[in-house]
Image (tube, rainbow, N blue to C red; front, side, top):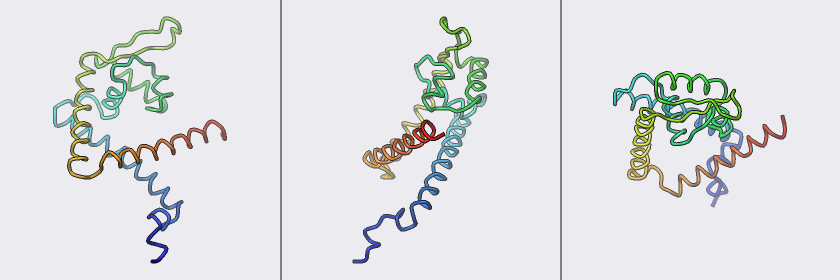
Length: 165
């Protein structure tokens, strides 16, 4: 047997090449996810919010949060969080209230209308999960492996930000 049969695809290409390919794939998947959400909202006739805002509503769920908390949880970066939260409040998808302790901070939570949008996204994701598993695209073990690997990369990158820079 040749040695190549025992070496995975990443090792055959070189780790750096595999790493760059994985980074590009994560980026493409995120953009594709936003396109899939956008298409679903067009299909059901919800046109006034964008995919990023819909995903924001989904991730907030039943929680009451601040923009800062969303950033520290790693969901969103930069000023687009504040902008999107403001827009969602203006459109009636979220309530906002100043914090009693820190008057500069605003806490937000979903309105009934926001929960309807969250449910559309949740239903879409449930349909995807069922389709992926049902068609044999990936099983529970495969999802667990991907998640474990991505969490390790996330931890490594977080450590790089905290300790090197």
